[in-house]
Length: 107
Image 1 (cartoon, rainbow, N blue to C red):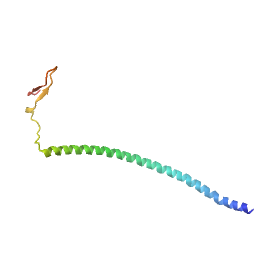
Image 2 (cartoon, rainbow, N blue to C red):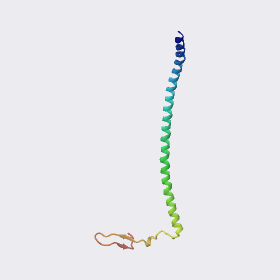
Image 3 (cartoon, rainbow, N blue to C red):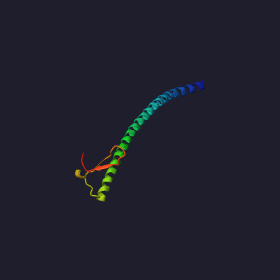
Image 4 (cartoon, rainbow, N blue to C red):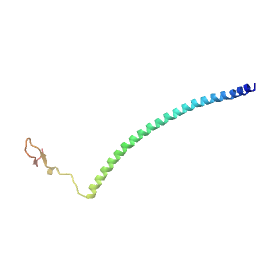
C-alpha cells in the first residue's frame, strides 16, 4: 500500500513536468527554425551587398587605372596636342594587291 502511494505521488509530479517539457521542446524547435530562417535572410542580403561592393570595386579600379595613365602622360610632359585638320594624313587600301597609299587631301 505504501508503494502505491509513493507511485501515485511520483506520477502526480511527473505528469505536469513531462507536459511542460513537451511544450518547451515544441516552442524551442519553432524558435530555432525561425532563427535559422532569419539567418538565411541575412546571408542573402549580405551576398547582395557583396556583389554590389565587387561591382563598385571594379569601377574604382578602372577609374584608378585611367587616372594613373593620365598622370603618367602629364609626368612625362610630352606636350601632346590635338592634330590640326590640315595636317591629317588619310590612308586607304586600294582593291587588289596594291600597297597602302597615303593622301594629303580630305575626303
